[in-house]
Length: 182
Image (cartoon, rainbow, N blue to C red; front, side, top):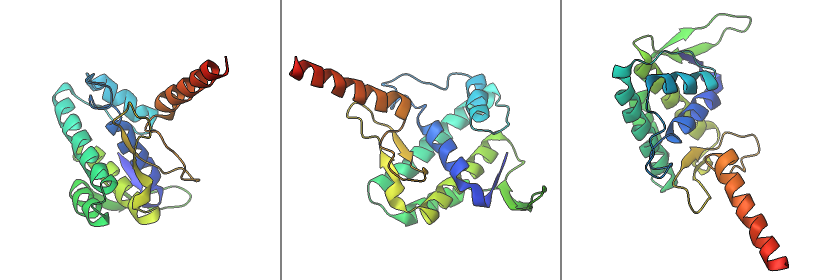
């Protein structure tokens, strides 16, 4: 699992996706119940990897650490918190990637969890450096305890899972308007 240093957004998006699987976000329901679900999450974000059942607990522990990093920024702890904590995750090495436009890539061949930690740690470091701490946010939906890193171009994302939280908020607002109009 590798990530070009110039492509931090993929790592930050993967970190956000991992955070969004936590029971805290899903009102006590664990969304990473099997190694296959980790593989599906990785594939959905363009990363190859094969999680073993033995690694599942370590992936969940990494998820908790990623959430703690995002929470520190959301709570105003500052950039130093991200740099300190995410740097400890980013344990892989730099290598020169191939292709038409070679770029330095960051990753780890030590195993799935170390590679995942390296990619997400670099994603968070890149996001805070390129976009600033204001892009680390708590979900705007009152019913949700999610958190995310907004790596969108416009920087106006409000929900940890726009298709779920954003849709629920919009449907509730629509129903409220219909009730008050009728």
